[in-house]
Length: 189
Image (cartoon, rainbow, N blue to C red; front, side, top):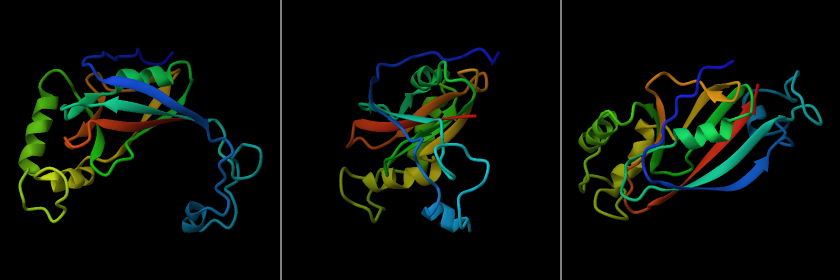
């Protein structure tokens, strides 16, 4: 059996699962990725309805209301998505120009420390060339260069494989947009 699931939920984010979409018919053959990788045809050993198709990927989209919070714990929602899916990888992706995802300890001050450090690194003032939105909004657009908009986490026996104190969090300093989308994609292994 996989490691025991260590996911605790704190906070009052409103989560809504919207779109479920299977991408088992996605083909790499002739795609920009295949071209960039120098593949004239799809890689061998892949399964699906034809060569180059990726089978077994499931994806949902979460709508998250962050309010004024900078750090929102997503661990419980990601764990629920992975439950009973077996072994594989889960990718968590924030399709926004002003948000990122991180693995950190929450509830013991690290999340507050992260907010403070981001305030020091990305002050809310008029130094930014990107100037629409609230004062200092240019800092929000620099954030994803420091905190990536996606992470991948191993899943064993339907359970996230996280360190004892690791939580999956959305980091969003953009007070101009309190509603965010996060896509969860599970690739069976």
